Length: 310
Image (cartoon, rainbow, N blue to C red; front, top):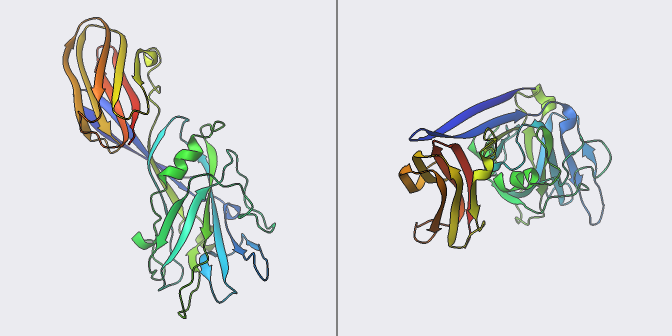
């Protein structure tokens, strides 16, 4: 299996906050598949796991059928408690298609999802996560892995998978691309055709790229209990608390999901002891979203996530 890692470093006066990116590939022909679905006049759930294309979207010529796609990525190297900042799947188009389309993307609600089989409805019968993302697919040109073949940001559904209580590092994730019944009028509407693993292996099969922050406790054993943020989530006022800091110089900042400094909480020397910084999201001009409170100094480096809600 091939994995590509990239570290993006956000440096603030000696503090290094690492954001990691991993790219994963389909490893086997049983890990990408497509399924016909028609629950009206002629029910069908026929599965295809050994063809060179993945068929996706709406098919008016086949009797108003939907085409679903399932993708299974193995050994996701993300720890429980991580924060997903972005996730995309890049397809390579096999054929051109001039019509726009829309699909719903979900993750399978299963911390140990199995490979696909030829059993009917093996995609649509899987238990779906609560979160979905709409992917509005524009026109496709033939045999291109470009922006039109790249999904919407799937970070919310990946986060749901990572937050499953049974999730552990190196589990697989299954993505379900669910075609919709869409009425376009008299124009020809055919499903999308993308390259599968069976076309030429992982070279043209859809690949997954996830960018994320690891949980704050990684590499911080011995200091992880010295910092807390509460309440969390916070509507406005929240407190950042530190216990038993050693005397020394400290830099305390808030960063957004992209590693950009949102505000400075403290910069300078602190004596030995406990500290509480009472903050206001409105006073700091923080918009609703996810932030990271970081401390760098004599006691060590610590990070905690804070969610600011409406």
